[in-house]
Image (tube, rainbow, N blue to C red; front, side, top):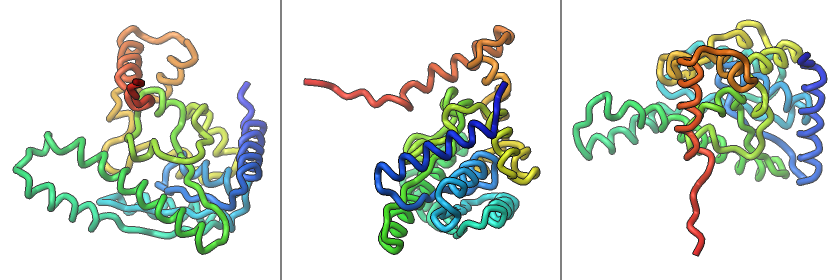
Length: 249
């Protein structure tokens, strides 16, 4: 039986121990308005105190509701939230790309989607370095991916896959929701349909499988052959995202 209180306490201890061991001060994380970043923020506030947590909204042709939900999380847990609008940066980059040639929407779609989290990651690392300087202690970047996303490779290399500490990596979506409910994450956020806020599609629409089925696959529960094969294919096709091959002379 999953115990969200017990798991939350273990995560908080993990954070505190790591920070003490490495003489760290604070954390920076992107607040998307979704459940994963909300739960991570709540855990770090519990572990470090709200004064050592910096949340960042990083809109880039994004939905306004996501920014509003991010503010709700910041208000709930009383941590600092700043906004950096990446839309002009994205558009400037695209203007340079357009000089290279006339590409179809289908050709640039994946590149555009993945550029956004890469710009966001550059932003949070910039802020981590800045706050380390002005706060007199080291700030690091927290990741917000959960086990289901990671298992099927639903993340961007050099984007949301890049971080200094991860706390939800071994928890399925349903487990993250339970932890969030225990920590008091507002219902409208913890039960929000998961999406990247970038493509206009839900996560499950993009993946073609349900997170609940991914969790079943991970836990060796019964699924149809079609669904199992789809999940296995996604998993196998993502190996390159986890391991960088290095030639040894």
